[in-house]
Amino acid sequence: MELLTVEGVRKSFRALVAVRDVSLEIHSGEILGLIGPNGSGKTTLLNMIAGTYKPERGKIFFQGRRIDGRRPDQICRAGVARTYQQVKPFLNETVHENLLLAALHCEDSGGSEERVARSLSVTALESMEGVQVAALPLIHRKCVELARALTTGCKLMLLDEPMAGLNPTEVSQFSEIIRKINSIGVAVLLIEHVMRAIMALSNRIVVLDHGEKITEGKPSELANDPKLARVYMGTE
Ligand code: ADP
Ligand code: MG
Figure 1 (cartoon, rainbow, N blue to C red):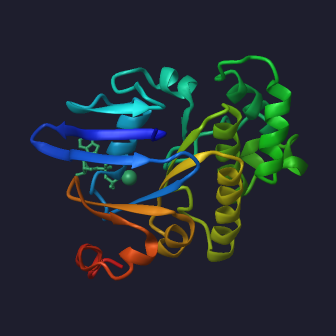
Figure 2 (figure 1 turned 180 degrees about the vertical axis):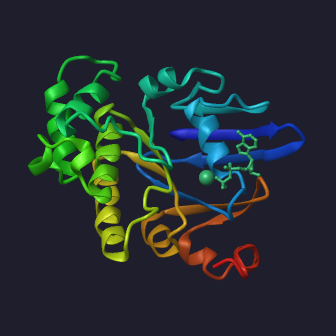
């Protein structure tokens, strides 16, 4: 069984069809890259999976159960965690307090401290657990976002351009942390503009253009895909 199945979902804003009948699957333990030019519908698709938007058409299944139309907190409890394009941790709280809050979003309330400790370790934040998030540099704030998602006990993490604003060295560090999260059994849907990173991290990649899925494949297959070249010509 697929971990997540998206079947023909659609979302419009007035006359604009932002996501047009898109289908995709995410397998357990996989990193699926989602790319496409600005405005191609990536964030809107992620928002339908996370429950922010209800699809007008189509269905979404997570671990075999329908989740489209459920509330974001219900989808989170089912095992799907997300981060935002804009970093949104509680800035005045410490790293540790942020993670304890995230631990409340789990089905099993026991074991919060264990989950927090594991998240701190995977995201290399152990030495910063007592620091106010506002005092951290951007890369570590972004790691707090990952750690918060991880602490919910999710099976699937939805990441919307998590590397925006990072320099190349930081992109490498951050990619390594995403790999670590994936290696402990968490599947990832990764939206990212940094092509080098998405090509290196993804098992498969889905390409959107004007709200439609135009192609998908392994990074090695897509490198020579004329459809991808056409979409990115002049923009990359
Ligand atoms: P991407 O994340 O690929 O850049 P989005 O999913 O954010 O694309 O946007 C897809 C299209 O839908 C764009 O044309 C965008 O302007 C439009 N759009 C997104 N969100 C809204 C909204 N809340 N209201 C109106 N139009 C929106
Ligand atoms: Mg977006």
